[in-house]
Image 1 (cartoon, rainbow, N blue to C red):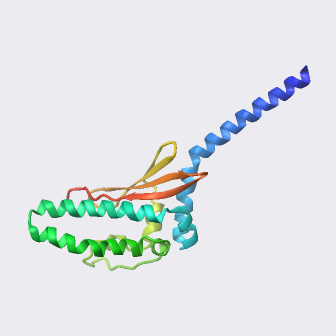
Image 2: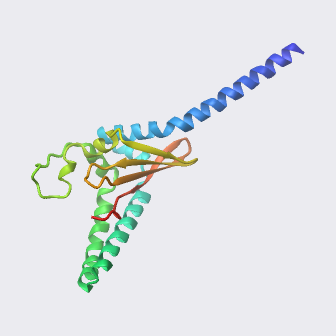
Image 3: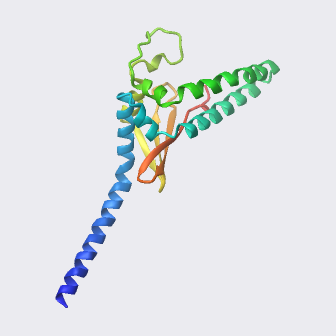
Length: 187
């Protein structure tokens, strides 16, 4: 009987080790996913970006957010011209999202973009390697669910807006499915 007990004990130890390994993977895998995404952006690796990001879902989510925000803005203006202007502008924005929210477009986020400090454009603060800079910040929080996690990133603007990057579980990997922009912030 001692041989049976040794085998039983060995099986118990292996089960405990497997549970610990699964728990460690579940806890650490979001950090590895973010690190892999950053590396793919910095290396401009379109193939890796295509595997880590569900671009059709991301494009639809971004279109929904932007359409909702622009519609809300147009109706708050209370002028028919604003509503008509948004109706005419939306097909252009829709097409821009289709063109730029792609593996090639995301690969460009890691490239150096020099914008003069005195440039009168809203994104002047984003000069440099934008994608790598966002993912390089130390002030982010990972909010964890069982099959998803969100990366909350504080922007560097004066309002301290937050960008939420949402990943969903895809087998043993994580896939970026949404970037929730701070479009509801009052300015």
